[in-house]
Length: 176
Image (cartoon, rainbow, N blue to C red; front, side, top):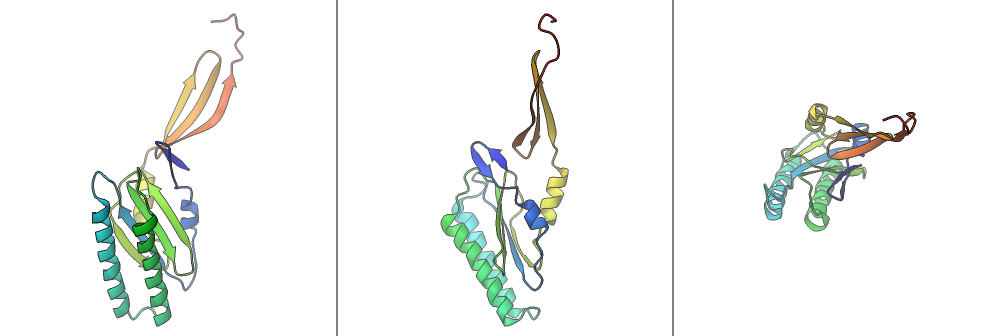
């Protein structure tokens, strides 16, 4: 779980998204830039509404999906739209990703960095951009020591994890 300025950012669900497979079902992968410094709520919701309308139009014309699958994908798009319009609060999130499947799978991931807004409908979650970004993101190790104890931390994506609580020194107290 990432933590940023008191708000929890859910990135622990990535393994579940990476491993998701449901033959015969489609996944809506909605990436949305929600950074308050770059875009307003009204602007990103306008973009979202426009893209969802565009995707629904292309779904109607598609010969790859049967009528039932088209209805399920349209329903997943509507759920994404409703959630982002009515319940979502961006707080300190810069990009939100929602994976919504036609079989009920739902995963929201809030990111502390910027990814381009897009909506992809595919049998698997669209994670190529996210994987590439995370692969190139640096991880840091932090070692805090004093005469009596040491602590080891790792820092990755605004998350700081404590690996080893504390080592007490084997050095006798009279030695400086």
